[in-house]
Length: 262
Image (cartoon, rainbow, N blue to C red):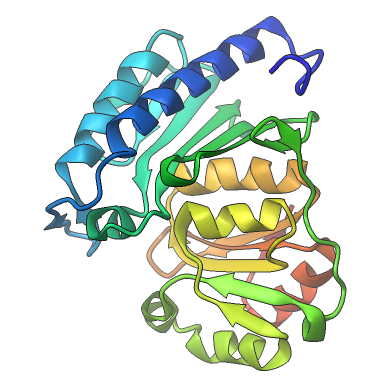
């Protein structure tokens, strides 16, 4: 690990250690589960008992530091620390509950509100993505780089549920993107996002995301050389676009609204 992320300070090294320990635990809990009973939450998403179990175990590990902790489900810690962890214990609970192996755990770390570390673990694929500010992004301890393609007609775009875009009032814009690109795919959640960091996918678009998802995605994107843009969703969350820097601005123009390109 030190050979990949050289010259990081001792505090970051400790946070990285805790992050990996937390991801090891989440993988241990979820990797061998093929199907799980689920319940519908108020926001329309699913939850299983494993979301809560995983969240609790991750919280116990991250709680070894003084950093604040924000989780998706029920646990939190607020010490007004400069550092704050954001935890999505199972990103892609729909996939997880249905036996689709494209789910994972997302961890993001901020310092005074700025994302400085992002981690994603996809247990069934044995893939782990790690980024540290000013030190790049790695997949399974190998540095990776995002696409730099500059032509929609040669690009592959991916996004999650079209139903989300309908609710956001952006389905027509999404269809316009579809008409411009070479290929559209439906890779969702942390698996879909991760494809942009290595350049396998040129543009990823998703709407109505929470900070326990976007904090990590921002730093993972930027450190892989990807562009990253976000805007406010109708429901107080974030819409995001990440991928080739050469296509980010044009994509935001198609969707319209007030986008911030990082």
